[in-house]
Length: 500
Ligand code: ADP
Image (cartoon, rainbow, N blue to C red; front, top):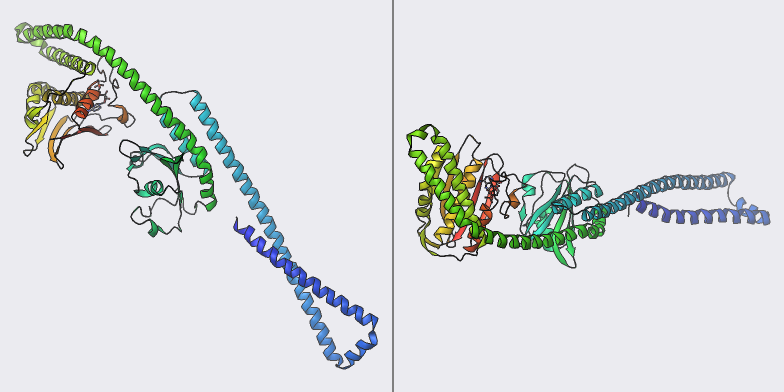
């Protein structure tokens, strides 16, 4: 309830007593007057006991007292009217605010109906960004984020954002219990923070963030299943979220949760459907590739032979650069064919004891001239403590060649060309290989898709979108993990962790 409504209620209670007292005193005066009129001689006798001066003082006192009391009543009445005006205004504002919020909620529903009706690619992140935007409007906030639970690692990841383009927020991955959002999902309780909040009770979870003035955060729950959290933040000072905002969020969260849950279902379904179509495509491609690969291999073999003859012939001395370029293209083609073949078949790993450091050195040996001619400096930092590991050397080689080839292509137009390969022994019987380049890097929007089969940003004919998907499959088959980090314009680092 608004504070002025509280004051008004208190004043109204007081007024009731004032009116009772006023009525009682008026009644007393009236009774006195009637008594004097009915039996004046008796009152004369009483009055004769006092001097005239005492009577005048007494009467004047009485009159002054009742005048003062009347003035007091008039003043409080005036204050009451003012308060009443204020309450009416506040209620008007409250009503307008509620109408605005309801219209926002209606807008949320309309927007999603429209979006879901015209299903299009990228609708998942579009929907979540839209929910964040409308939540900002709804609560007059500066920015909002939606974090969903990633079931693969049980972490909260930002999937929708509005009002801020901070990379740390966009790429945040929180454990349950970590930071404000982590607290909310762990306790499954909505939370309001403002400048009066006692942060000591959140010790171990989070501290006061300097840039956050006030924040609202609520868990996204459906049928008691927690699947994310909505964070709404105001940055300007003196703009705290009120208790009413928190209550409203608790009510509105159901409407906000619905489209998020709905779109998450659609995403899972389309992903499954996509995977199914992809798998079917792969089977077809596998059959096709197996049939064509042999012929292609022969053609490439013959073409490479001719190129080798040309390179050795003085007649073509001036065309050596072109010949090297054609050979490089043929190598790429060979790589694509090999990737297609792997994709089409289900290879079982042929594991044996292998020295990873030697494998990398042997792999780079035939590539040395090519990399040199492209001006690429290769930096090797191989951990001597990495003795032999159990793996399929042929498959690992393919995985690494794919990474190196991508690095080469990414550095085609950059002035600094450095390819760094590092091996390290990590705890728990694991080792790590990182392949970094100083190429053009990967755009943030592409990062989640680069391991998808057939995803490529390269021109048709140059990129088949198979390399990273094959590499990931090989690493997964070894019970390993491959991750990527990239700053657009500065390069990319692929990190492979494998068991020893
Ligand atoms: P392809 O190379 O045929 O396009 P990949 O699966 O090997 O297919 O790679 C997918 C996409 O990932 C590439 O098209 C490119 O956009 C991006 N990519 C992969 N490696 C790098 C890298 N080192 N630097 C920049 N972008 C890269």
